[in-house]
Amino acid sequence: MPTKDRFFLESKLFKEITLNYDNSKILFVGVHKYSSWYATIFNNFTSNTFFTIDTEFDYSKNKYGTSFHSVGDFLTHNFNRRFDIIIFNGIFSYGINEVNLQKKAILKIHKLLSNDSSYFIFGYRDHIDLKEEVNNLIKNKFRKVTFKNIESDLIVNSDNNHKFSFWRLN
Ligand SMILES: C[S@@+](CC[C@H](N)C(=O)[O-])C[C@H]1O[C@@H](n2cnc3c(N)ncnc32)[C@H](O)[C@@H]1O
Image (cartoon, rainbow, N blue to C red):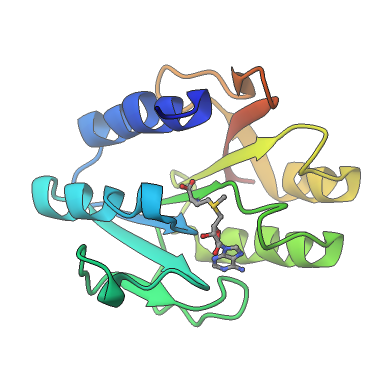
């Protein structure tokens, strides 16, 4: 049984991405067993390329083998490309926890987006994962937008205040 935030990600966000994007480069930060099949679907059934990175999860040891996955730390990994969409869900408080590291992550996302039309899709638990200093940096570097017909800041799981917000380069 998926949580409400995962249901939103899979059934709403992914649907909009597949309907609206072709030949795009997507980076999905952090992969767990329950999200390990996402890359297989995108890379086999759409023209988009779905790149993934996780410090721990290794596709090569998993049945969903892919050459688009890196095992490593998002903060230090040397990406040799930029991305049209970066999906950054459930990473703050789940590995990138300290304010300084969170700020580093935001600056890295900023650097890795291709252009003004690229999206930073941010999933987090409001008042738990996000400190004011980090929130201010996001507002300084990005502008808040809607993603297709989906409003930003929608609480998708009221049990844990899980939100998605959508941003473009400032
Ligand atoms: C709560 S899970 C979320 C997974 C995925 N983003 C999703 O929405 O399904 C957090 C994952 O992020 C990974 N992670 C945490 N910090 C990371 C980092 N600095 N670089 C890469 N992966 C990281 C963890 O290993 C874990 O698999």
